[in-house]
Amino acid sequence: MSTKKDDYMKKNRGCKKIAVVFMAAALGCTSVDAIYASTMNKAKNEKAKAEENLDNANSQIEAIEREQSRLQSEIDEKDAELVNLLVNIEILEEELADKSEQLEQVTKDLADAQETEKNQYASMKKRIQFMYERGDSAMIEAILGAQDMSEFLNRVEYVSDVYDYDRNLLTQYQNTVQQVAELKTTVETEKAEMEAMEEEYALQQTSLEGILAQKKSQMGNYDNQLATAQAAAAAYKQTIAQQNAIIKEEERKAKEAEEKAKAKAAAANNNSNNNSGNNGGSNNNSNSNNANNNGSNGTGNSNSSNNNNSGGGGENPPYSTNVSGSDVVNYACQFVGNPYVWGGTSLTNGADCSGFVMSVFAKFGISLPHSSAALQSCGKAVSYANAQPGDLICYSGHVAIYMGGGQIVHAQSAAVGITTSSATYRTIVCVRRVL
Image (cartoon, rainbow, N blue to C red; front, top):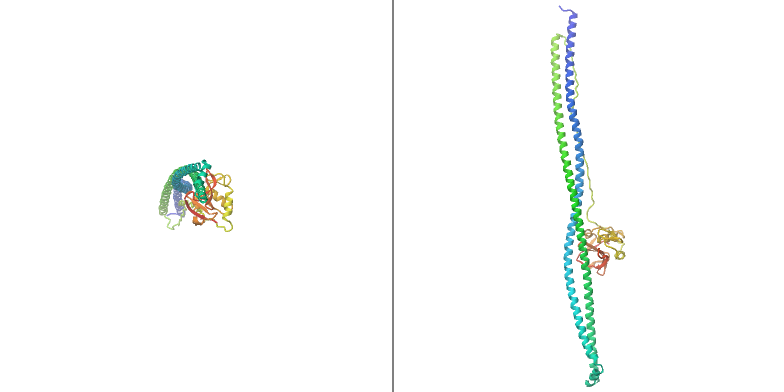
């Protein structure tokens, strides 16, 4: 029969066995957790690094796309300028062909007029020689041949009338020659100006084509940079996906090991209780708190807002009621004789046609665009028949200020500079009133 001491010893041995079992289970769980934690932490660190790199790559992609958009806008603008310039060149070539035909015709007219003047002068010389070289004998013959004084006076008057007719006709022919010669000079000047403008257009075309080539080359560089950044971003996304898969697998393994350790500890506890023969039962509640690594949901939300508010649209200058067209014309005419400079806006050092118009009107507080094409939409349209001083006379690729009386003041070309001309020296596209 067992004594109380034996019972106590058996009970004590049972408790020790239970403690040993739980300690072994705890050590086993700790060892498993350490192994899984190391792999998981490494995966999380790799994921965090990849997410940071992905954010940087996305930011780079956004920056490149913004630059591409800006550059594409510039390319589109230069393309439009080049198209407009080519249209102007075509129109100018047609006008130049017409001017060449006009010059050819006026040259022929001048030659005909000079020949007519020469013939008339020769005929008059013969008659003068016949009438006046004979001297008194002709007068005596006229007296003797006349029946009376009245007939004599009629004969003398006839001689005078012939002389006056010859003189008037010669004067008329001389005036015609002078007018045709002046017309020829005007046409030659206009043709020379058009040829100079044609050369300037060619320079502008070369410049625009060079700028376009440079910008398209830049666009190609941006395309390469974008492709590289996009490839890097794709690689970072793949790395993140791989690390997420590793983290998920390690969490599954850790959970499975934890459940096995708990089951093993429970089984050992049951066996120990059965062997101890302790019918009183002892409630051994083992609360094991293991760290559950749920993985970090690293969400790299890179919200970038890019608002490009480029105020576009056609120019619509303010109308002024206290500025007269005559004031504008008088001010503009002060700069006649100053040089023409393509792209310039200086009234003294040089301006192109639209730069000249823009700077003149700026003096009176009126803002106009530096573009002959854009000026065709400014103000309101009026007919040439109703044009007033200060109105804008618009041609293809050119613009001038109307002076009145069929004249304009404008920055015409590098060969002529700022000058005055006939308003109809070229085909008028439209007339705009901005005052």
